[in-house]
Amino acid sequence: MGTSTTVTGPGNDPADGYVHGYSGREARRLGDQADALADLLHDGTSHPPGSRVLEVGCGVGAQTVHLLARSPGAHLTAVDVSSASLDQARARVAASRPGARVRWRRGDLHDLPFPDDAFDHLFVCFVLEHLPDPRAALAGLRRVLRPGGTVTVIEGDHGSAFFHPDSAHARAVIAHLVALQAAAGGDALVGRRLAPLLSGAGYERVEVGPRTVYADGSRPALARAFTRDTFTAMVEAVRDEAVAAGLATPADWDRGIADLNRTAAPDGTFHYTFFKGTAVNPGP
Amino acid sequence: MGTSTTVTGPGNDPADGYVHGYSGREARRLGDQADALADLLHDGTSHPPGSRVLEVGCGVGAQTVHLLARSPGAHLTAVDVSSASLDQARARVAASRPGARVRWRRGDLHDLPFPDDAFDHLFVCFVLEHLPDPRAALAGLRRVLRPGGTVTVIEGDHGSAFFHPDSAHARAVIAHLVALQAAAGGDALVGRRLAPLLSGAGYERVEVGPRTVYADGSRPALARAFTRDTFTAMVEAVRDEAVAAGLATPADWDRGIADLNRTAAPDGTFHYTFFKGTAVNPGP
Image (spheres, rainbow over the protein chains, first blue to last red):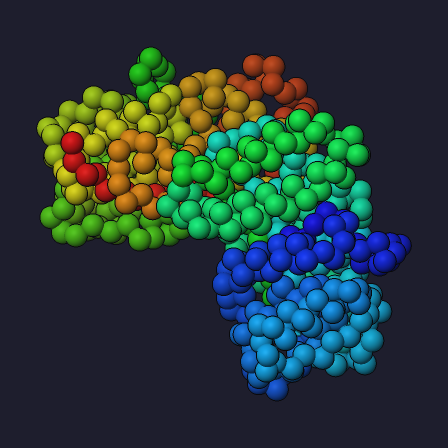
């Protein structure tokens, strides 16, 4: 559920980073998104005091603050490929969880700077969508997870978005975002693959379930926070890229965005499904 | 979640009925579907002893048996436009709920054979999808619902179906089913419209929520019961109609069905969302 072009996998230069850069506005968007979704996504994820938890690909810390809130006694390490993101994540945690201690590390998830079996739990949220080979990445992560340790993975799936009023223009701008993410080596439809990816990576006791956002006129705050300020804002952010790629004319693009925002009106509805999975590392 | 061409609305001859007729096989399919989904769909729907409940469009009784199981003391009336369906519904209830008493009535939901305010609760499941004007139908139903009485509405939305492995052929056969249902005056995407339809029909305290079916390799029984024997079977049933309409070649159709069934394999996944809504009749 990040943007379309964050790719931290092999064959891509991490320095490319987010197409939107690391602006304050983008950081706020990710923060607002996480706040609106925190209960939905983090429910059920809590680790006991003293447990060693690694957040893989923490980005600007949008999820880190929620991990800390739900596992206050855990020993949290957060790793990201981007120093700039880590700086923002550190600042975010300092601001919202002043007493929290997090060990911050810069590193590529395909070559993590930790010894074998270093963690009891891994948390991987909105990361696989950006990787060319998410199965290999998940398999590689098992090295730093002790046998019997667990992994939690959360991903969206843009193919789960449907809405009223329906609109071919709105569907098109979402499809363009999916295409841009695919061109960058990612997969904005990865949520539906979570279970086979975890199984294929050698994890056991794989349990995946949908976490659905549904907003209608009886939930105006959710329609504003999710439909407009999270989902549509995320699509809108790649306007220039989509137009430059010839995927849409500016007029068609703007029509699609307007139609998406229209679904947040009192007589509109919007549906989106995240997938959350947990699994156990059987060991080597 | 019925088939594509049941239309009981005005301007359509009820005698047209289901395109698949009222064969034993079709009745069993609808029954199996209801059994697999009963908990998901009926959870939260229970009426106190003595309350007057009307099931609108009971069809072959697939939901009637579950209504009876959850509201054993309610006074249930079931109405359908088809005498043949009512006969099957009566037989189904007699077989599975021998002691249950149901008042069966033949009638068009747009002109119900009941006095004003005759019921405390209405139950409308997989009916709106077949109607040319579901808002008008819901508004008309308020006449037989006492002021302060409640309505429960359940509908699917075929646009909520996505799966792994993804397949353009599979998406196409679903789109053909949607097109056939639209050509027959219905809307296989009605689920997303449930909230505005209820509000627009004059109901108050409208509450709609998604009821999601998600099957993967960890749920082989659900994948079989829902992905294969309910959803894919429903699509497959309109093969001849879709081919005759020129929507698909037989080969493309069969490929689409095979690809849908493929998603029920151990490394496949399937997602579908029903919508269930409740609302209160404020009175005239």
